Length: 81
Image 1: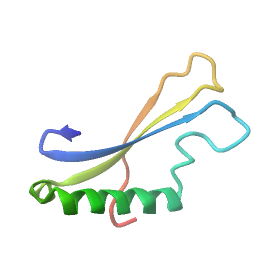
Image 2: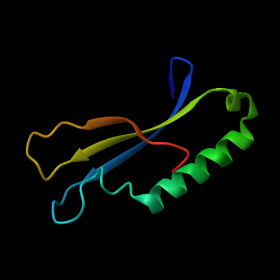
Image 3: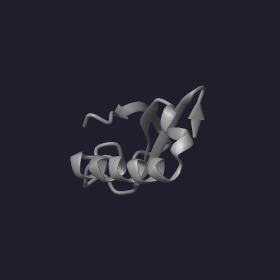
């Protein structure tokens, strides 16, 4: 998606069980590496978009907490990971 001139890659995470890491916490280093690789693959195939700044956001939703609203974490991590 775009936020102004910035190309934003959004990872949406859902956790329905509170015994494991939170939905936001599940976007760990390994997952970030995979997201960066996917973004790189995408940009290689869409070279016109490569001129835009990029951002990685996470939308985290934990259903284990009643009435919890999703959290939108802008700039959750960056490409220098």
